[in-house]
Length: 324
Image 1 (cartoon, rainbow, N blue to C red):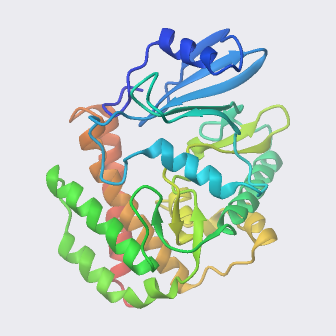
Image 2: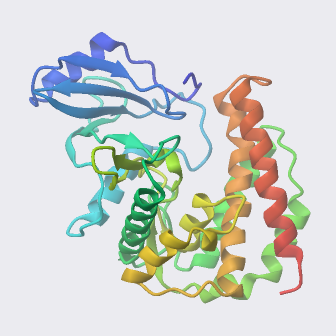
């Protein structure tokens, strides 16, 4: 997929950098077409599949929080060390920018994304959702000391970190002439400040939990793990419930919830639903703003993201304006 944020790397250079890592000869090198932000190559070497992922250079136009994203992903991996959370192992990383002017790393390859996947039966799909739910609970069990994105600096409370996230995306939207009713947004934040303050535990969240980042083994239809950890942060676990069902209710995914509860029991009460809507509000603002930097106005991807961003944003804002 074409995107203004992707670093152009030729197939020749990708092959050369892979082989210089010492992993082996790059037998098949093919650019992955599905990514929207980073350039990623799929590489076959010695019968194994790998991903070669490149970050953005300093001149790339990005949102405020989208700086040094590959370093952020490596930091998320460091936070996951010692856990049994499923993710492709990173086997090589270079952030020196000596061979190429961006960060890059190589990870083990996985089979197929959940998005668009056809299951042989309902039982197989239920199994994958249960396993995903359990794995997400294990991610959330990783605790931090403060709150916020790895690459933006941390805040002592979730309320302060969330406010900073909102401030940053509002500033980005303003620069790129994106229409947001910021008066209503900040009025909502003032109304729910006590609920934000209730989040006192800093948890690791994936931050981009959707079907395209969930991978499945098609041989036995079992869950393999999550990719694309660059948007991970320390904060409210509600974020991952928001991105997995941005326009719906995560509780309707009963086997995901069952899997989650098998590791950490959770009650989807009114306060948690408010926190989920706060994250949907934020992600809706991101979805409305990022197309201005990634795609040409009026293009298919631009219009689709704008449509869903507006839908997510409006629905969350209306829900948050209702009496608590």
